[in-house]
Length: 259
Ligand SMILES: Cc1cc2nc3c(=O)[nH]c(=O)nc-3n(C[C@H](O)[C@H](O)[C@H](O)COP(=O)(O)OP(=O)(O)OC[C@H]3O[C@@H](n4cnc5c(N)ncnc54)[C@H](O)[C@@H]3O)c2cc1C
Image (cartoon, rainbow, N blue to C red):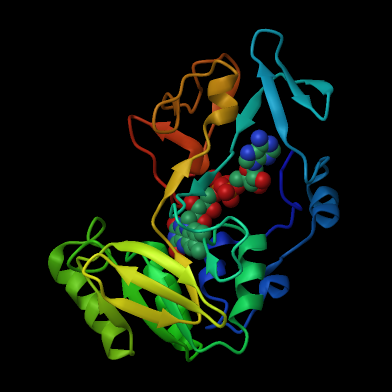
């Protein structure tokens, strides 16, 4: 197994339950790479990127070393869309999609009171709920009329909106964010109607794009995700894909269950 991160085993949905369950990033780790490698009797290379796949020779290029495979599984995940005005090195505006992101967010949230969340989809709502449980003030900004509008029928979506609102969430619906300025002690989120929301830190939860670059640069067919058939085999023989990066029957499903 080869991974770009530190190889810690954790349940990603737990990243949005940290305040509710009183667990920081370290407490969410179930086992580290060494323990997992012993448990599963496999070798795990951490902090390592696969640079290229040669689908004819059935090899991958890792740190200038060529490794042969008989079967290869691409489970490269997805990356958050970034708001174009957010600096990559920002320590006030966070996209949280892995344990390192969560660690940085938890550190920044210490001693803070008000979190602005851009995006009213699954991740935005999960963080709103968790932060409210952690007694933060929460402001949610979204393009739609209600939360989770692409996932739920209107009645259910209204119901979730009401529950979060009753728990104290402030909503800014049918609004887009045109800028987020970082000030000495916080952020100012500017909306398309000119309204400005002051908060201590912000979360950007505006969606994810499947990581297809490694596959496409290696000549494997991609569309929204890495395309595969119902047995999860890609256009390249003996190369399979699953998880957030996979596209099956034109669908990319960014949830645990379809994995
Ligand atoms: C906060 C949060 C809450 C969520 N809540 C839920 C929920 O309640 N229910 C639900 O169903 N889903 C939820 N999800 C979604 C779910 O967690 C994901 O769908 C799932 O974890 C994706 O797993 P994956 O293995 O495909 O991708 P990832 O977990 O992203 O793993 C991708 C791996 O690929 C590695 N990688 C990428 N490119 C390379 C390369 N070139 N070389 C080497 N390694 C590479 C990365 O280092 C990483 O280890 C949530 C997600 C988040 C962020």
